[in-house]
Length: 139
Length: 175
Image (cartoon, rainbow over all chains, first blue to last red):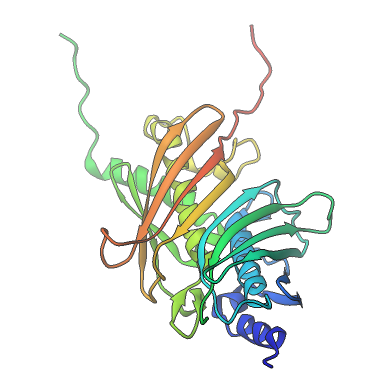
């Protein structure tokens, strides 16, 4: 049997944009994934306060959601985003690492449904949440 | 009959608008990181995502990263909304682009939520986006945005979002 965790990790590491953002896959399970991104001044959206741009958080949530889909036992292979909705709760605290957790909570032959959350050091108050639908490829 | 003032020379108008747009866009490190620029025709803006290898999300196709597409749409939406919000102030001289980084400046719209529909995979080449402000209230705004590459008729992504408008700083009430 193919080691999906290893495959997903290699896939993330092979993504040029994930490398540009400095993303690291910190956990991969059976339908869930965790990714972290160290603070980087190049990704700031509010230069007066040094807050990371929401777009960079979106990119993390999208990558993390895709990894969660690929790691699902019923997912035969790749995936692509159909739609993704992001809700921004608050600004991420400048200087802190941002972490995202995604869970593929339902999967059919054609569609995978995912929820994801982004945090900084304060886990009680999420920075952003996402929910999306993804394609199920390679079946 | 009212005397109409003479229109300003074209260079003056262009210089003022381009300087304001430049200050709006170039002050944001993340916009530079993604290589997004804006074309301006009057008050109309088109976002340009200048292709670079680091924007790739799927190296096997290859295709632009879905997160980059989302960010491109969101950046285009915020810049277009900010631009429309400030345009009359920039024209009247009430808003000085030099003030954008000052602590007393009210700031820019903040994203409340943003939804992206991925219609086609983003090809490894430049992409364009244009946003429409459906409603700009005093507190909230709704914006739609669409993105294409070679053919404007064939969108590769569309998005819509809600934004919290910057609130004017509370000042001492003078009565």
